[in-house]
Image (cartoon, rainbow, N blue to C red; front, side, top):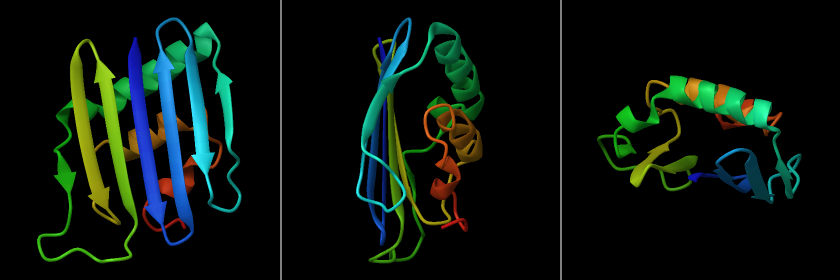
Length: 126
């Protein structure tokens, strides 16, 4: 079983996504950001395979633990955190607005499989 948790906090509110999958992917979204709905669902086996293929391209296992400014962070900045658990391994990464790892855009591409408004989570599109 694989599991992914993604949290996004900004002035508009909070967004939380939890996914678990083996054969098919089940997800739960909770958000108080306008335009996002609290919902859950399941992807078909084909959709799950497409998600996994897109997720692999992001190479999350190569991301650093933190992507934060070298100087003091901005108190009300946008913050994101991602945790991926698979094969008894855990990869955790977090960052602040405009500090995103190489591959973050590819993660957003994968996220579009369950969240149509995934572009909201990229810098400069809020």
